[in-house]
Image (cartoon, helix red, strand yellow):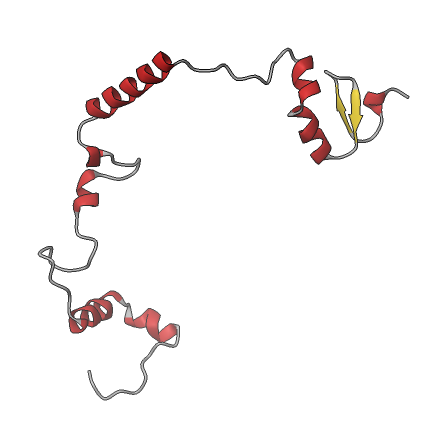
Length: 126
């Protein structure tokens, strides 16, 4: 029976059969398979001039992009990033606990709260 019709993994480039996925990955990234594809595993050595040119290109790209902090990720606006992350009125003062409780009470639908069993804990305060 031919190798490509047997169980396991078959490499048509090297005409070999491998028994599991880990050995297949090791084979694909290995020296013999890469040589069979015509690739060498050697890295070209960079010269001093190539490194200098690359550094200059990176500096020019960084200067051309504007300010250092002007980067805004996708899905965000610059105004949203500049807005204060703390809740408050924007001047850095914090919101008091009473204001937070009042805002939460306004946001809860009384019918939904009663249906879910959040009718209250029997406090006399209204």
